[in-house]
Length: 124
Ligand code: HEM
Image 1: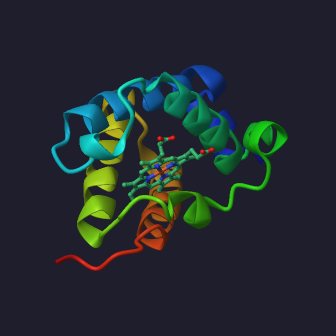
Image 2 (image 1 turned 30 degrees about the vertical axis):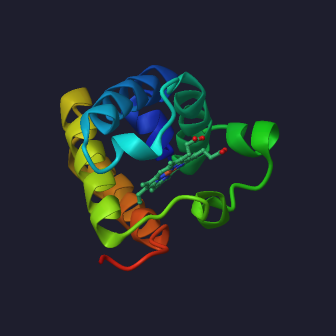
């Protein structure tokens, strides 16, 4: 059975998602202030992570070690509103890249779960 990574078209598609996604993040009033001006290194780490998350080669673990994503996000105040904003940017990126059908639903439910798992502050 093909992994979601293979089903969506591999490296080229993952790179396209990452590019569209961070362009949106940088335009989002709630998200942009959390990220450094030089977004390129963040994009590269997300590319490594998503490759692995979608069933491609474990690039993230090879280069950065265990993901432990929640721990890595603890330095940043992330509320439910941030998670929703993150998901909105990702939803639009997946739309623009043309990820549809069953594989979209599979990817989406895991991204939703992961995003809400990152919440570490309550909305004020
Ligand atoms: C890193 C924000 C959700 C994957 C980061 C960074 C921020 C951030 C501020 C650090 C950027 C830097 O290096 O300066 C958020 C917010 C989220 C969220 C506000 C809302 C819920 C997610 C989700 C995933 C993810 C759902 C995975 C599907 C990553 C990865 C890194 C990262 C892989 C790089 C970690 C590293 O190796 O240092 N995120 N994130 N994030 N985020 Fe998120």
